[in-house]
Length: 146
Image (cartoon, rainbow, N blue to C red):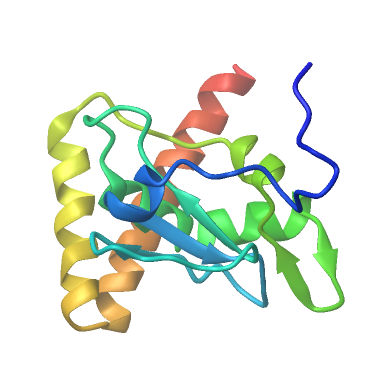
């Protein structure tokens, strides 16, 4: 069982998470506002960094899911709140179910939509992303029930 020294406020973080591509989110916000950066980015303890454990994890696909209505509804129902804010702490984020397809075409389809959003946000593109995840999650729920 490891412990930090009594004078240390928190565990040291691996510098790699600040340097490599990542998804970032504030600890508390009213909605699911996740962002992507491949730049060096350092923040305080109230920012969470999501990185792929392996290089084949598609961060753009995950960003699309995390910013989707499907994820918002699920997290709003199951996640912790402080007042009107959702709390995007590491434990509920780690425990969040994710539909991650084996089909590379699906990954690239969502990645393309998300990259469009990063260049210029458009409601119709967001609706397309939301519809994709709504359909996939609906299909998966039906399969689990039967």
